[in-house]
Length: 328
Ligand code: FRU
Image (tube, rainbow, N blue to C red; front, side, top):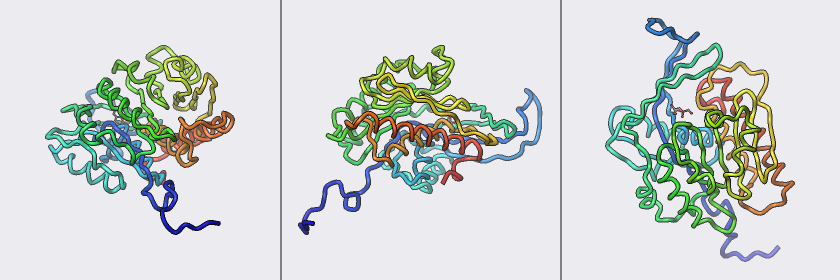
């Protein structure tokens, strides 16, 4: 073997810091109330337990990625008002999640009051956006100056700022290196937001939620991925998880399906979808598979099948425990 002694291989992971997954979206505080049965309106009762938890889809994605030992960063607007503001920052820190590019504003963070029914695991979310801190393209541009070399993957949670996100994605697509990194993924979750057509044809990987698919008339994940696929760009991957029915994905019009994890006692479904997304991304990264890299189709399908199984497994495990830390 030739030993040059000088510069090492550019991609040597021991020399270069490992690239991060950047998740862009919202961070909030979830006030979780655990009940034995769903409360009656205007009743007064004791509940079983109560705790605070950092929430928001992109923030939850980071929590799970970090528990899977995948270096990650959260980017969003963080408020300075109220006791929750400093608590959120400390909590990110305790999970080793980088927040260096967050936009700090004098606003309150959003809050979710969650009713968790311990009997069947349903989570009822009463969400209050308060000052509605959402990322603007201007902030994104100022922070990165179009340099995304630190990231292997950039995931966008779509809120009402789809137009802003569309411009952010354009910057990342212009930057992409010859390996197709950073990979761009988006999550379309909320039926009440619009203009998703501005971004769905730009992402390498699209996650569509069950709620969104149902709002468009689809009855299951298989139908949803086939139905939405023509909106995606060529070669993109479209994924849809459907709770206890498992999940499906579509690539080049080929559909793969995987069942949900069986024989679990479901106690907490809060953030199960976010866990699925993180599990899928995490699995592809640990298999060193970047969706835009040209690879042989059968190899791609095997890796995607593995990721789909892994994501379903992880989301199921999450439902069987309170919070996320048990996933470690
Ligand atoms: C779970 C979650 C919660 C948050 C709510 C926002 O997916 O991100 O943490 O309260 O959804 O819609």
